[in-house]
Image (cartoon, rainbow, N blue to C red; front, side, top):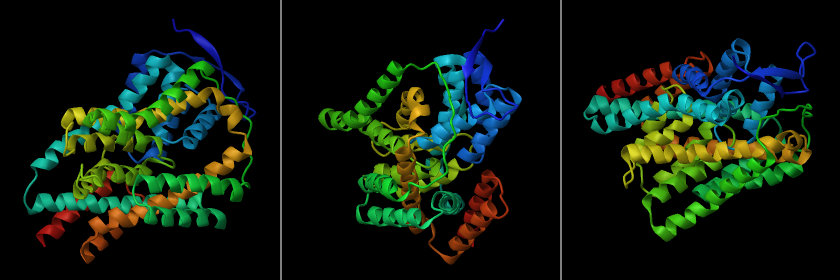
Length: 417
């Protein structure tokens, strides 16, 4: 017989929903099975993933109340990292404790990571005009997908003049200061500008989301996050270990991703293409393939780790890159959980995040031009194919895997023309 425990999830519940709900504890194996199903079927990116989670875990299985789920989503969207994976990790923690959290992350991540590693090995064996056209079609997919992301994020994150100005300033900063340093500077400038320009906004409702994570554990996780963020680059230089350099690059990218999975594109491009670890063509082909698989977009890191020029690469590189890119977001999530309810109500935190999110739009907009557009759009035919993909996504709302299939076949057709 399963035990139950009381969990205060939200005092912002609708009148018909009690503020304090009794949540049934499950087992790690139950959590693994549930999230494996989601990992195999959750297409469409992080926003779609959150919808799948709600249908399966809030509506059908009742692991958490609507109000508690809304609070949890707000927390994960506030933090850097992959929001849907962080929500899944937290729901696994809620249902099955620490082992449940690991089971949720593993089951949701493993299918797409495995598929992308298989694609990495298969892509190196492809040859001939048709194969080249298919890979070029996947690069064109990246244009359509990133354009859709910029369009949607601009509408929601830069709805007024101050935030549009912050986005434009971020573009200028990234263009002037190329690489990851420019992107970090753009986010910091956006947050500071938000403190001044973005104080007005909807009030945050009172809520209360309680996990069995003590403040001591939270502080330890935040300390580990800080030590890894600042210590890994030092260790990589001192020890001259390629594995540490790889872990440092992907940990830094995972620690700085605000605003959704697509924002990882420019950060990873700066980390792996600029130093020559991965060619730009291979990078964009893998990014296009990542749109066709279910699960979190961050598993793109597994593909990059597998195709690295210098070692470690292959399976070892995929594992290092995958763990490194997810670790910072999960450490931050557990670290912030004990303090979130009080912190989220502070006006300065909300203002800073509005500015940082606006800067993210500028960073992604800059990446849409370089490297995505400049590497993929080489002819009027490529432009027409990218436009068709964008319209399929935005106007006809076609599933991403269908768009990937159409673009790949279109690229092969252009190569044979």
